[in-house]
Image (cartoon, rainbow, N blue to C red):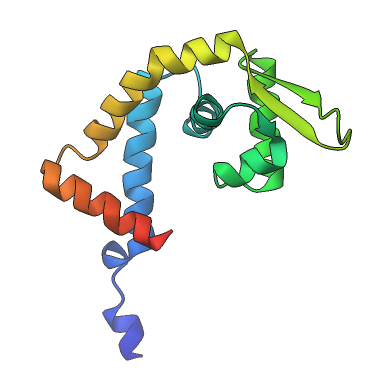
Length: 139
């Protein structure tokens, strides 16, 4: 029973990370209403690396197969990405940024950086860098 008595929700990493994530999502939606954070991550990765298979893209943005399929489908409907069968393997779907998707990413990249800064604004610059380094060690 000692563990149950000493457990405090506000001191649990998962709970705190979820609250920080919720705060970040509110900031992101207020400043970049065109897409969600997961959709923006896909645009950012494609802008960084170029076209890639949907499966590889999912791994590159830490999404499972079902999630990346849904995100790509929504981005396709928005005209921000295009998909095509890979000529070497027709079972593989290649995802590419459209001109509209590339333009949206370029237009909103600075805003996304501002949202990240706003998320960590209660911290000093050194604390924000340290937090990021620690979180990256947990991934």
